[in-house]
Image 1 (tube, rainbow, N blue to C red):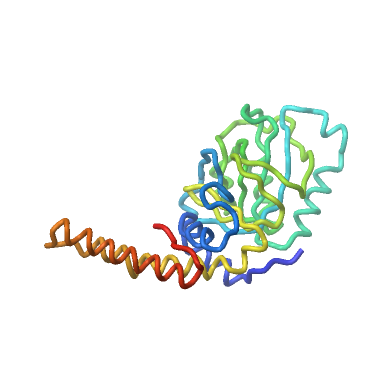
Image 2 (cartoon, rainbow, N blue to C red):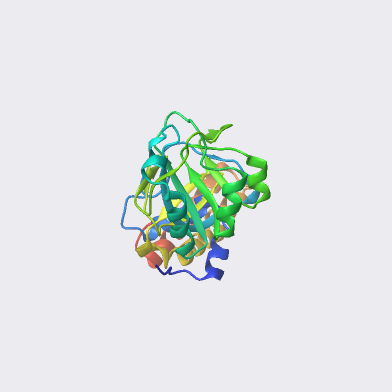
Length: 250
């Protein structure tokens, strides 16, 4: 598997929060920006001080409540880690927990986060739990999860490198993940090459039109303020139409 974005482009995507990346994505997607690509359920960023994480999805399904998976495939951990190691990075591990909505045990902790960091992973999104949150942070491994928990139970990889569902969103291996304290966005391979340019353009568009119009309100009447914002909004939309063929929203 090869990826379409260079390392410098990944670094530039990390400079914006996830809503800003969404603003670019909605201009280039063929899907519905009202619900496609981002989490539909609430998630929690346990390391907001680390800022956004960006990487390509590697996927795994777990069921910590069940002993049977270890009995069915005693080599699962080795095979799963080989899959992760063989996938180009940077990588974000997307973990579907079959025990949801219950949380029986955690896939993540100090040891597993350090192992995955060594394999080129920058963090995880799991609709289950994490533990050892301070040690995970110390490893430089960011996590968005449902909650914290104490134990790992019978955690074992069930299957990997396939479609998963987390927080109401389907994610495929190779999707580009952008995530922070707001949630996450999963961008399909066909949309990735245009994402940085679109996000950069829409961010500049806001900064050059509607935001300065709103902030230049001192000494003006409400009527003058609204007229200025309307004019700036029309300019914002004109620029978006010329670039993407869409109005753009803010």
